[in-house]
Image (cartoon, rainbow, N blue to C red; front, side, top):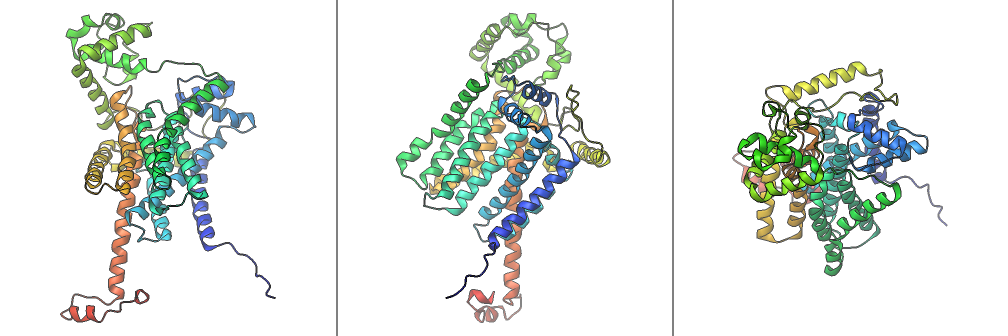
Amino acid sequence: MSIPGPRYPSRKFLAAGFWLAFCFVLALADWAVFYPGIMSFDSIVQYREAYQRSFSDMHPPIMAICLSMFLRVGLNIQHLMFLQCLVGMIGVFQFVSQAICVFSRNRISLTKSRIGAAAVLVLLLTPISPLAIYLMTFWKDVWLLIAFCWIGAIVLGLLNEESANFCLKEKMKLSALLALMALSVMVRHNAIVLLPVFAVLFGVLVDRILPRKIAFAAVVMPPLLYFAANAGLNAAFHIQPYSMSILPMRMELIGLCKKYPELETEFPYTTQMLKPGYRETFVIGAIETAEKILQPGFNDEASIRREYRYAVSHHPLSLLDIKLRAFSGHIRRNPHLKFMLEVYENEFGLKLGERFLKYRTWFAATLWNTFHETRRWVFVEHGIWLMANLLILAGLCIRWIRRLDRRSLVEMLLLLIPLGYYASYLLASIAFDFRYMYPSTLFMEILVLGGVVSLGMSAADWIFALRSRGVSRSPNYALRVAEMPSSRSAI
């Protein structure tokens, strides 16, 4: 009778553990440098809600609720920030790795794709990109970009496997994808425009492995889960309502009065709330300039909504012009906030640690130069990645129309996620901060860099294969090709 030998971890398990440790070390380093976490005014508002356990929907309440749970068990913001940073690192790494595999049609091994993903992740953590600082900032935009990365990684993973079995692994991936789709909408108000894209994408993915009738029913699951989760949070935590929708309405009404003086008489409520000389101060799309030119009490929701409906029905083209001007502020160079390197003044004693102050100062100065130098890095430009989004999506649409295959449809729907989020700032925009569009920009950066790495690795493999077969540009080329061994073992 044979005695079974000792069981050793599989090579696949060890490789996964190695790359998880790699992401863990990067996250730990980033966390140590920016400990306990960077927090803006909005972040402190959310921290205060978590500390007092009194929540409102002025900011998406799910972040404050999660933080309150950490506080309740004796942890604090630094522990949540480490988890945020770690999940973000792994999400970016997985997304890049899956993108390399998909672009190469699995001709590149998983090990090589992970090496390429590690190189891309390290590149994005350098001061040519704000990723390292954003991953340690308590912002809803950061939670959204992390959710985007994981959605991209899961969708590309499902696309890569093309499994036809509804096994436990498929169930777990689809469940995680559904939860991330709902979370994406819950952490950013304007991400609600993505619900139709999420719904169709989820239905198409379910259609791969389940009957068509079930796939049609699955289309309603992302919006259903989102609304159910929102209702559950409201019931469990008594979230106070705050009408955020009137903010972009106010901004656009002021913009109409500034750009088209002849329309002032048609908006009496808005006009009477503006200080004299407001046109010289107000910048369309910049809420910080609106605060300087408004009279106290510009918060009558009924009057604002009435005048906005009038603008939509009587001056749609003028209103569209204001929206386009506000949207363009995100694309062109502007002096507004790009990133933070501080903790906003607060009553909780929260502040950045002193240990890595010198490195933080260098990193911030280098990154600031990246944003402001004449020839800026592409990683701090939204316009380039928006154009890439449009061009790649157009190509995928043409391919899908010609083939009508599921793979092209999934890829097209995946590209609609960043484009839809870019477009949400055309519908409503109140400020020009770089971080607002960064989830879509990072999404496109990962896809394009994944494609570049895949192309480079494929070219290197092709050159290596030619050299290993002894191919050269000699007069005896045809003879060499004829004598080439045909078996794969000769490569």
